[in-house]
Length: 566
Image (cartoon, rainbow, N blue to C red; front, side, top):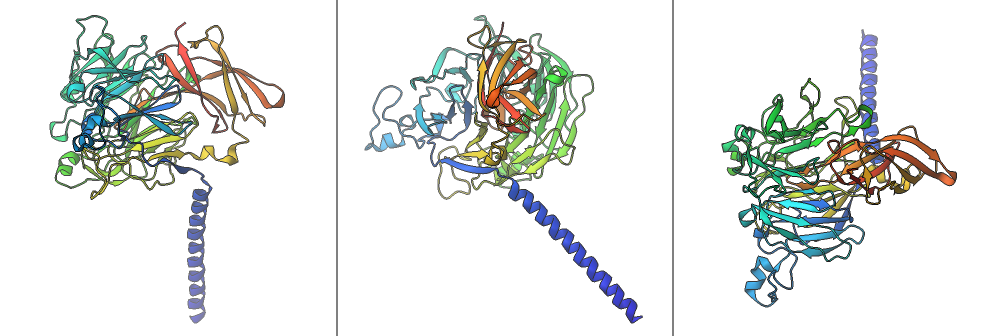
């Protein structure tokens, strides 16, 4: 009996050691994978002067950053007001006068420096789209800015500035969204606080007006602060408009003012639109199906009652769920999965690899002044092609909280610019849990690590054929690049429409994987590829895109390309 007990003891001890070995080995393997990942954070500037409530990348490789003019003094002092009156450094009144401070700056990526820009109306919680010539169309805001139309055309001489149109919007547009349409430089503006309508810019006739959209009435949540503001807009490749607000979505023929489809409600409780502030992307479009499959993804948001609870100082856990749905064809089902943790007020960006980066935000509460807690410091990386349950990877954490009024966008060199954060209606730096954040960071994905340089295509140039200003739809064009070793079988060519980003929305963001007709390898590692432009403006509205060569998952530096009508 003693021998049996001894044997049982020995077996048990061995089992325990085996289990411990398995646990430790698994932990070591997990740690090794984490150590093997080379993503990192860079601090670019300690002070941008202006909160990055809104950001947009221009084709001149600058970033426009701006805040609300009603926030009072920013951290970027001006020498004079808009009307030319000087700002005194000795006058107490001038030191407190918001007109003596910049509320918009232009950031130069290559020089890592700034210059102030001038606003003449308040763009607080506004929207924007790039026109085909690279001009940023920017509309709406608060107060006297709520019906304003503004333009910023990037320039190389550093003399360009904001211009305001003499024409106005038909309705007040505060917390509205907009989208560039396939028709030449035609933009649709949808929604806003107490604005259950849409309208177009430019107005073709002086009597043009806004159009009622019952969908916005139906999705309005009075007790939740709206929960249908900043609706998610995506252009389908059939030319119709996907509109998502609160928990519901439709496919809308804006030319006929008609709902084409009503999609199923996204499963789960809570809401996804502002102030619940989930986020959404249209997954990469692919030439292999002639860009006909269009799939949208919606992630995060706030729990039911989060807005009311936050007003009482209680911050409910945000939503962890994501839903994917194909909006083309006839079979529309939300396929749900969970992020590694709850998230609200985050940004979703499409990387050159086709993966989705989820960054910024909070784990509890919702959007609004002091309505959230527990910052989300770790970005998530989502691979749409992997099996469900294996698509998310948790990345390296930042030490800087990016809460309400923060933004992120993709840069041409593959980094992600991250800025902003201010849960207060003024610039507040002390005696608060989450001070106004003016530091500027870059998140550097692991694909930019030096160990991948031998796989990275370099010196990408674009050869325009027949058009000096761009590439016509459906035509072939040639690009040249350098690759020291033979390319893998997985070389892809993508073009990316940089978005206007604000309040967890990346307006107009889309990535297309282009068809390569053939490649040739010249001497010394020089490569040429003949690519095919997108077939129509429905697939890619006219304008500037970032073209990237991706070799075995490692992207080149991106180059600007412009698609134009024939």
